[in-house]
Figure 1 (cartoon, rainbow, N blue to C red):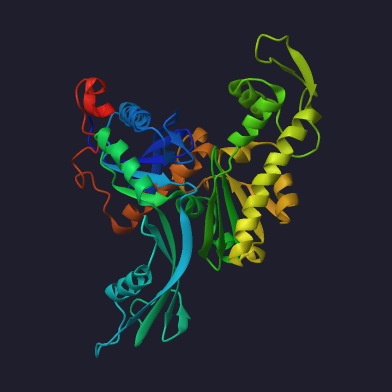
Figure 2: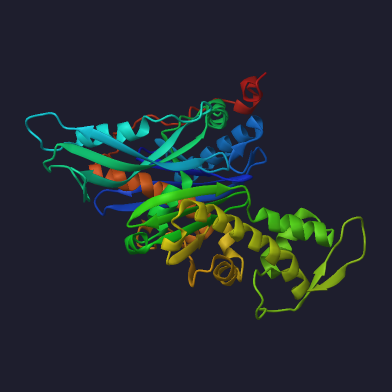
Length: 414
């Protein structure tokens, strides 16, 4: 295949992997999305591997699709993670500068961050990401301490951790697929970087990623991520409620939710009655859309109530002047109005990737691609910044192809 610096960004979600292939145009300083697709995966639930065989098979299908669609080898593979097992907290690190030359270097900053990370965490957990929230030199706040003079540097760091076993199980699936992971990141962190504007981060914003099995939420204040939470409640619960109450298949319930569902009372576009096909061969029947609303709305309220409860624990809830909804669940009509009501925040918007950050077809601006595209942007923009995106920087494909791989017993642990 052709040689180019191709990045694969995979959003490991609930029951699916959403992936895009991207490249960096160094001359234009632009991140280009070249291909992408959403793949169902029965081996994933809430971002956690429940079946390594199924997950491995989906990874293979995903990488094959991206390489075939772009006619190029993938040279770097990044994954965005989520899940109820992920926890976040803030830690402070200090580094004293004992040199005669008191000018702060990058190494000094890294030492301070390392000190913040060297704190006890659960024995069965490990650090996923660390994000500096603010720097201080001789106890005075500064934006960037590099090059300044001081006797000490302090840093507040937002640390995200997850279960080691959960990470290892995902690693095993990629290993069986003969794929090398270049890097892994907390999905909400990447998402906020591409969905929120700097002004929103400074003024105070609550970002909520409404996924299928999982909802991620975080607060940005004064430009930094102050808290984040993952809740095992997603839009698939709405589908399950519809299926149970109406006694229809999950597939039929998803279709009805997509075509007729709404989360808040209001004008309905189109028909006010819905024809449903119950299970067990019963005759088709009709229901009023108000009845469907009565099924959907309580579950949406539950999700936003859970988000509000978690964020209030942080003490930063009142700092959010705006709530930004994204992810596939944000496509449900009426979701903004219900969020305003449940969260008691006047300014609520549904958003996806900022259009000027990437060059892509319109389909990839759909909120369901938001995390995958933001992950590609998150890592690619760093290549733009350091000038490392060169065609010869990575000559080896991350996907080590094996002939008749599905016949290889190693796939199924045989």
